[in-house]
Image (cartoon, rainbow, N blue to C red; front, side):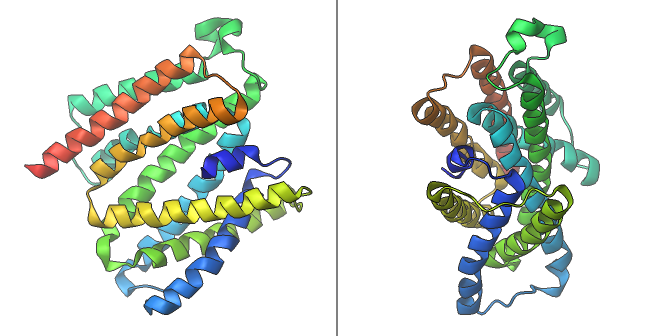
Length: 282
């Protein structure tokens, strides 16, 4: 729902949408932290991870919103679900976890899915690469979605590492504070700040904050009480909703290239998550 409203907002830059979302969530999180008496800084040994979670998570949010604005809802959503593959790669590099032939197969499926969605002209020809938006904008949106998947993968690993030692509202607090700071700095640099002209856009911005906060709370809580793999599997439902919303609200039927790419990416992320789940259950 949050991504749907991001797509519906007109004439507001993705970074500015991120700033509005952070402000709205901050107003909700502050009373929750006061009520739960968790403080605003966090345990001493976890602060570096909270800082990393805030910076990387907010960067992922900005990239995701830009992807939604630059390309179709279905394309952007599908590409973001390459996160489990990146998680496996990061675990192999930084945590020295085993990277098996199965992981390589899932990575190949993900790359194939992204290629089907991007449809580079040198492989598919100019006619297959054509989209409603200009191809260059579509390509920028695609790269933003891939970058979001990378940052989101690292963020999920950090949240899981902190576990239950950090209250999930505190984790979100770092996310919104650092996200607001980052958004303001970027807006100052690019000079894109402007108040939404339409009252409907203002309503959409509030709803983006509301649904974004709900998503963060439930995702953070899910990662605290359940392993990351089954959580990642359930999140693939986002792809289904993205296709439904794109058809219903934008009257935009996804291409067969997008459907094929979605099947590859979802199969890859689900397969990787199931494999990790099975390994951790042994």
